[in-house]
Image 1 (cartoon, rainbow, N blue to C red):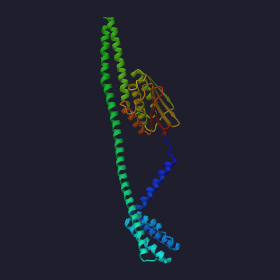
Image 2 (image 1 turned 135 degrees about the vertical axis):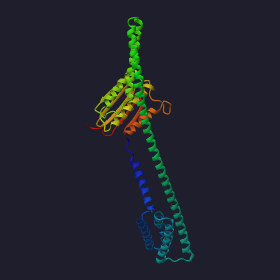
Image 3 (image 1 turned 90 degrees about the vertical axis):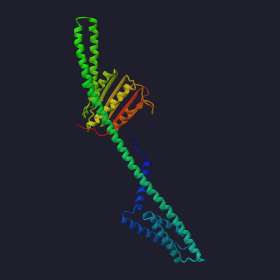
Image 4 (image 1 turned 135 degrees about the horizontal axis):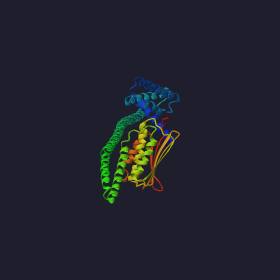
Length: 370
């Protein structure tokens, strides 16, 4: 997993701070916090008024009154912002007159006060509208986040249900193969043996053909047993993944007439039995895709355990990956990806330059130490 860029982390931290800051100011649920902000607003108006008096009436500090006005709107609301605006105008007028301001006409200070008050009220309206819009957007984001969280949880539940149904159907088919087709082929082989024994004394040619038929039936029985064993596989023990993969490779070579080799390095042992089972199913799905869709002739399965990092890889010499979005890109890859996510592993499926597909599942979490 790549590390986030420092600038993106800084921007995310700043946005989070800004959001929390405005939310803490805009929130009025805490009465003591609200009273402190109101008191601070009045003090700020008074400080600016004193500074306005000390600088004299010729230098106006009207723009600085916007700070307590904005704080009033953000901390309490637009009504308190209006009150602070009027208070700021009154403080400004008192400071100017106390500093010795003289006007040629009485309407001049009134006009200036109305202009300043109108500007302050416009700021109050804009800021209150902006804060209301921000609260509405935050409420919508929270609603959509909650809906998205519920949707993700429901999707994960459905995916787990699909896997459970798949495993249950796999076991059901395995039982049918073992108890149904397997027993039927075994009975057929017994009948063929008896018929071959009777034909051995009569016609040699027919007896030879019967032996071939008996051999084919016995091969079918063996293949049926191997298929049933793979389908009926229960949870693999946390230390038994290597043995299970080697047996699976041997069964694949026999059943599908391909060269399937398994190589295991280290002693991969896990904290939970389910981890080994998911890794086995990932290898099983990758081999099945290589045989059925990739028409591979050779498949290499490798299980490596180095320093607590387990890597399972399946490499074949088939036709390679299907183009993205094509019909060949089906459920198998999604199932492998989901199984990898369940155990906290990463899955990478890549097409090889010389042909074929490489599937690598890497589990980086701590493994069980016996």
